[in-house]
Amino acid sequence: MNHSRSIRLHYLFRAVILLAFALYIGHLVQQDALHYYVAPKLARWIRLCPVPLCLMALSLGLQAVLGRSAALCDCEHRLPRSGLGSSALYGLFLLPLLLGFLLPDRALGSAAAAKKGIVLSYTAAEPGNGAKFTPSNPYEAEFAELAGKLYEQPVIPVHSEIFSETLGAMNLYKSQFEGKEITVSGFLYREPQGAGQPGYAVSRFLVQCCTADATPFGILLQPGTQISLPADTWIEVRGKLHVALFEGVETLQIAPERITAMAAPSTPYVYTNADAAAAWEELQRADIK
Amino acid sequence: MTTFTPFTLWPLLFSDTFKTSFLGILLEALPFVLLGALLSSLLRVFVPDEMISRWIPRRPLPAILFGCLLGILFPVCECGMIPLVRRLIHKGMPLYVAIVFILSGPIINPVVYGATLMAFRSHPELAYTRMGLAFVVAALIGLILYATVRKSPLRLSIRREGSEVHQADTRGGRVAAVLVHTSDEFFEMGKYLIIGCLLTAGIQTFMNQGSLSAIGERPLGSYVFMMGLSFVLSLCSTSDAFVASTFLHVFPAGSLLAFMVLGPMLDFKNSLMLLSLFKTRFALYLFFLIIATVFTGSVLASLWL
Image (cartoon, rainbow over all chains, first blue to last red; front, top):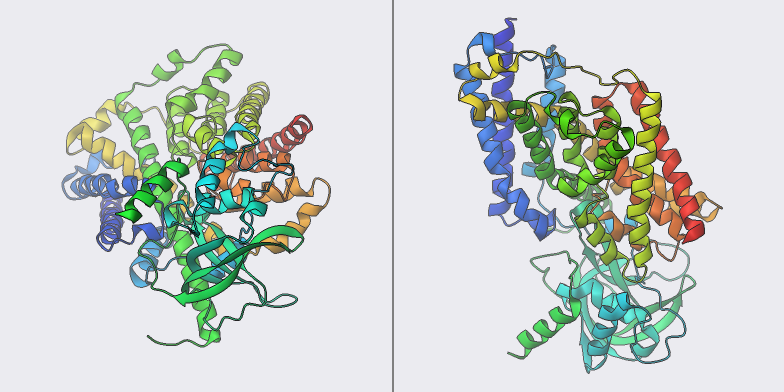
């Protein structure tokens, strides 16, 4: 085959693929589906990607159509010579696009949580914390402050904006939260069948950057709780907190009084908050209004 | 709503998990790969050859220090690093300095430091040790490479063509030349990135992390387990500290350190990219050096922690 013609063809293919990537990102943004895959702070950057992608496609197209044959060369980046090599290369790039366009966008759920291993006690209580909510080092000050604010509530709400922080703060001072009322919502997680009774938990995925680092955080429902809902149903649980041994570790559990199914929230994941105590104040103020 | 029996539901759940993880990793890496490719093309078109070498100290020790601290200036994630480094090598950066930059850049930068500190609220010493260990490992490997590698290990050595002639002919001038090179780099790195993402997503979907943690119960087994985990998970260096912190009370602190230092230096995604950049023998030698020094370093650091 004529060498420069083959390069033109490659450039055209590449331009089309780049445009398709730009289109896919545009599609995700338009469907408001980007948050299924990445955290909001990263989504900002991904939203900008179609701009360079389109420009790249445009200049590739320009070279393919108007470029002088002498100027077209692949001396630096070898293009695949065989038809097989090219189809393998472009097939690879089409794969994410096909998956993206053809399969529905779904959030991670119980299946992923079971593989990753659900996190039930994120912070270990440091023994010998006699006084109420005094941090044992300056880095726990934020959790201690939040724990103090949570403790004052007649019914502790677990806001999704500070989900992992709330669980972490309560875990740090778990013995003091014994018997407190709590409401929490999340998807229903069912412990994979092991020995003994099935264990249930209310869980949310915490996402740092993208779904690769999604960590399932949850709070256990008291063993023996009878639930007829299928796994991954979004539920709201209201009940009393207890500390009990779970797999040899002291873990906070909820003795549920009421479990109600609810609609899935628009953002399925939770994110970290740099200043949880301030966020709490803001959420409380918004609730009163 | 349609109802599913458990038998039809399970494979469906798996493929959803697979798709969500795969596209998540790919979309996460996309801006950084584009940025890396763009920086590399800008360097190619606008910075004359050999100019970089004038900025780099001649003597090895200051040069290694320079490589370690370059990450603070270019806070590019590891995915964007490889195309950038390849260009830097062609522009006259010595190999050992480039490797030091590849290894330390994704860890020794303010963003990662902040994220680590936040993940280990109650153990800030882990964040300091992470930075320190990354520095020591990168510098040590830099010195070893300075002493042992003489020939260029690059897979594809670029001919020094008169680049001016080339760009004058690109339709649309220098801007278009930059963009064409950016897309060349994008496709070059993209194929390794996509394969890496596929493997990572496959492992995340099908591997049960709980069942593997039994390895971690043997002495030093936790180091092997955490290092293996960081390799297969291919997490971004800004988020891996958080995943490590969930193992805080399961494994010794030294193994978490190994996880957080090895992962950004070497994982599925970037080992494929390194293999595309360097000859296989050199790449394997580099992988061995990284694994050995991170292992030794983190075991030694755990004595002190």
